[in-house]
Length: 224
Image (cartoon, rainbow, N blue to C red; front, top):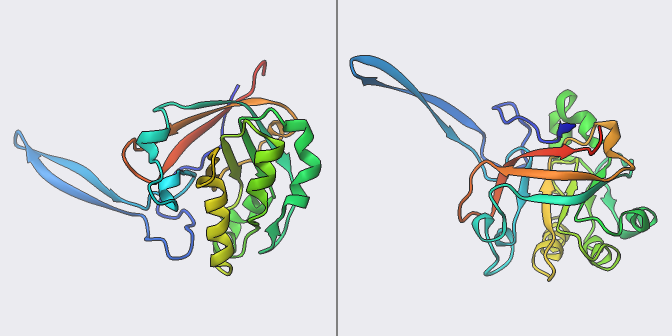
């Protein structure tokens, strides 16, 4: 069974504060005497469900083209449930009890429940969401030594109200070896993602020398 865990991109998608809006305009030309319409789309590389690569915050860091395959696969992948409300940090102590069961994970996702606000209150989802404390990356490297991807159901691991800590968290994931890529704005609402291993399949929307990219993300649940 394949479960989409990425959100469709559209002009109504919530965006991290300060991000440029998604714009779509039509351009009409004449081809062989008939009108032909082309859509011109402008968006941030961190819009919607996306993955951050080291080039995002690390001097000399690798890009999408450097470090991702066109169709990367990570298995086993796990999702842990850490219910959290409001603009509070997720700390190492919040994740630690869950980690022995997912120690072999190549990808790890945290479901806070914040995504329930994405449609009904996108402003709060974008600006007053749980975020990840800088003490988390080091713990994950110790407890999950094969981890390649960390994802979350909030718009970002960063907080607009805590820019210094947020940059330190990104750097902790992306700039220290082994690197852990970051997925943000992930749909983790499907119940079977919790408490069983699955396969993460990613399809970057654009494959180029860029620091981050929207992705189509699928969870493949074996035997389902």
